[in-house]
Length: 138
Image (cartoon, rainbow, N blue to C red; front, side, top):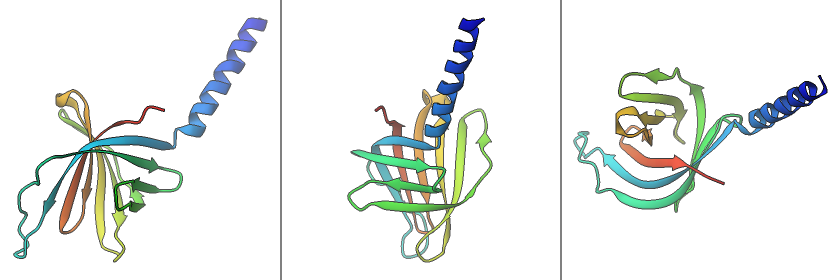
């Protein structure tokens, strides 16, 4: 009986610690590409893939996403949108607003049929950034 109490206490402590840390997710971007609209408001072509090694943080408690690139990209989350899942993808979208108050979407996407590759899409009015990401290992 004593071993059972110790086990239950240990299990409670472990799950409690995980819940305290589970609200901040950290990733490393291994590469990125950019898609921009031209002067006629048409989407151009994706830029060449650029390798990188930058940190990305998703903090659900503070409702923000930070991309620690050369110029730090700081995004406040307005709304946690409903998760979307289909045969190909698992998508976690977030509604945000830019500095001018324009709405846009940021999505964390897991590509099921591509070895569960993870990507971050920042879909703004005139530009889309895509980052290939992996979980950050402490």
